[in-house]
Length: 78
Image (cartoon, rainbow, N blue to C red; front, side, top):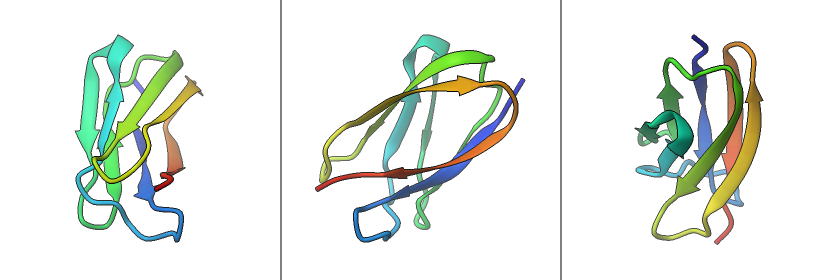
């Protein structure tokens, strides 16, 4: 199954550490590291909702079509 990797950044392109990246319908989640990097393994193909939360930022929600391994960047707003 596909892997999704990427970065969580603030609106100034700085890494956001300890953001939670959740794919609720797949029962998967990850935390971003000190560089804002995250990896979610074994993501079921199809449309998956990504919820990204961090206490200092507005919640980010997006539906992504997962077909194969992909790399994304998520920008959070203050």
